[in-house]
Length: 325
Image (tube, rainbow, N blue to C red; front, side):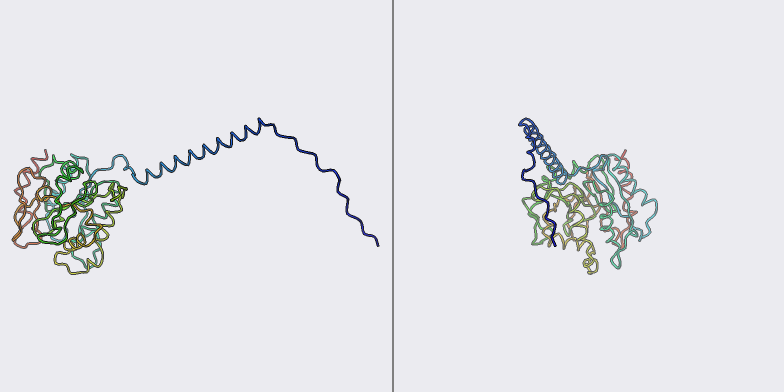
């Protein structure tokens, strides 16, 4: 049986393709180079724009510079007139400077078994979330009045140069003799937490927390990360369950002394700058209110059974209202 042989391949190869002229090759190569350059330029622009936006996000137009947070105590039966006047005092001041106000209550947050005074911490965390692009959160106790509304918080306290002139450096963080002291090398732009002392303790009834636009030690933007870290640390369930004598106050004193990331962001300023008292505290050197001070605070009127917050504040109502007009 004979098998069919495969077909023979042609002995001649395929014809040569027509050569491309040098001018066409040059045009193609030039277009390729231009395309590569354009892609490189676009990539560079994208990287630069994203790197700047990551380091320095901008607040949307209309974001208030400060939000004033006052937690309304619903535990002790204060009169509606008293509460309304407290709120109006903050609103008048905020309107003058373009700030916002925030009035949560002690019933707004689940504190589990912690004392009601702990509500200030989730209230500040709530404000941080509600005003994510607001640079500063100003916590002011319910039992206080802004007495000099002409003073803006930025010019009076938070401007970096102004803050540096006020900062009490290399002093015990918790008076009178804490071995942990405030840093002496910090600049105003690095500060994220501004407090006062009353001679016996840190006083958080009037304090400022930077909520947006802070920088770390390398000058990189922190956004709202530090504020939320600080507040979450303060509200740690372990601290809430621990039987601190002054609840959140002693918890704050603990964390600012033993957390370097918090100590490195704190500034202590003179008490009369933002926390003048209406009367002295037994056994403690305090700064008492004088005409021209930013505010007056009735520290301890809500915890001392022999005192009455509503009666004590009466002498300041008319003066604060007059100053607001």
